[in-house]
Image (cartoon, rainbow, N blue to C red):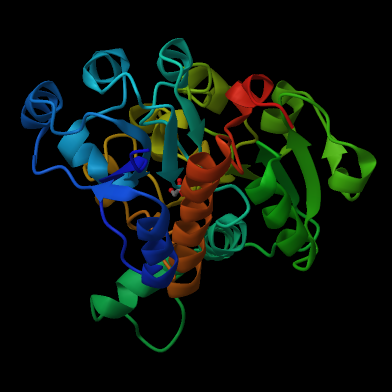
Length: 335
Ligand SMILES: O=CC(=O)O
């Protein structure tokens, strides 16, 4: 019997030992292409024929483009599993994968601590006006007393969390240590054990009453621009917003307007609507805290994410199922 074939889209940077175990159970194929047109031609040439499982990284989008219907039409019909290294899988059209019989996995839980840590860092930094101080110091404008804009303490403030999955709950746990009062909105209310005292509120109440809003929801067609001009208008004036989810869950141009009017006093952002481009209005604003998509950017977490993805590849090859199939496809896989 011929050996299973696994397609590697992107590269393994950390979990080399775990990846080497895949070579024991399957032939690994790496595409030669460096752009979508060539990749499609490579599929058409038959070079990838017979693959049943693919491992993909976030950066491999530069080779394949989005995993959409067009691409799936060109991939060999033998592909049944797509193992994505990352928590967010907005580069993948899951509906199209389902229609093509491809099951998709991501890396939940592996990213929770690192992403929540950066969320808290951005939250405290934005709340305390640290960017203004940092800019003043670097511009040689520090005269021995802090710049005039006073920050705010987190203690007693309402933190509204939009999206209470693993990352949202981890943010809540960490924010409690800073004395914040936690409220959340989610597609569905959590069990009391998962809520751990966080108060479930409707979306509008979350917007109207939060002092700080943390965006921790996945990006998909129904969450795109969840926060746009009408939502900014409902918010408590002077709110602080933190986004470590995906840029496009918020309308970046409307955010720039809300900052200019003072409706939003500051933001801490790890993600942007058109990465790696950043709206010039954000770059020009000294009171916003911006980092370049570094939520999971630690040695330990990158290693965990690769190992998690490799576990999915191994299960797909050996058992024909995934360790962490994405929620939209849960019903397609028997427990
Ligand atoms: O952005 C990081 C991830 O989706 O894992």
